[in-house]
Image (cartoon, rainbow, N blue to C red; front, side):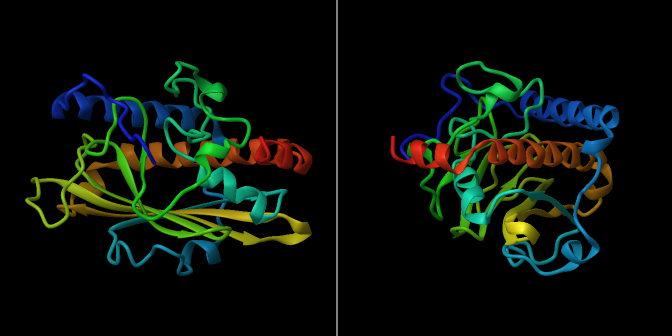
Length: 247
């Protein structure tokens, strides 16, 4: 990946960035309250409790959530959409009204509706950004596991403001470590299940109760992502897929 900067001339400010993050999750919580379909996990009890790729990254989380959706396409067709995720790449597919891409497109237009050959390569060590004003030090996800066609695992250790915490410290008074896994598996009728799992270790542990708005907003955000990704994959016919891959 050639460039993972998205905040030129925008120095980090902890207080300002924390307010921005809080506002984002509050908006997602309110959006979920107004749209019941965005408040459900979609995962079965078995899917929520079984061991998934990436679980070892945060071994002792004090909060975990699993979401899932069935997509009418095989895993091999879904994988390229996962591989091109990220701000400034294919996007995050959430289609939320206030989400924006680098060109200023918002809502459904903020994420790609076709496969982007230049963004479908992904490897351990790559950095995916959350959104505007992010870079390697703020609002960044590090790719830690890639199993093409099967799973993709991201990791971030950050403060509430989004500032990344260096491995090995020094550590701020409050922060959290988070793994984010995307898992594909076959389903009936040639479709597949897409599972996402978030495992978070809040430090200090009482933050898990104080961060209720983040958990509620995260549910709405990830449900929006799953629905948006399903729309795109199912709208992408195999013939269109092959044509795009050859351009």
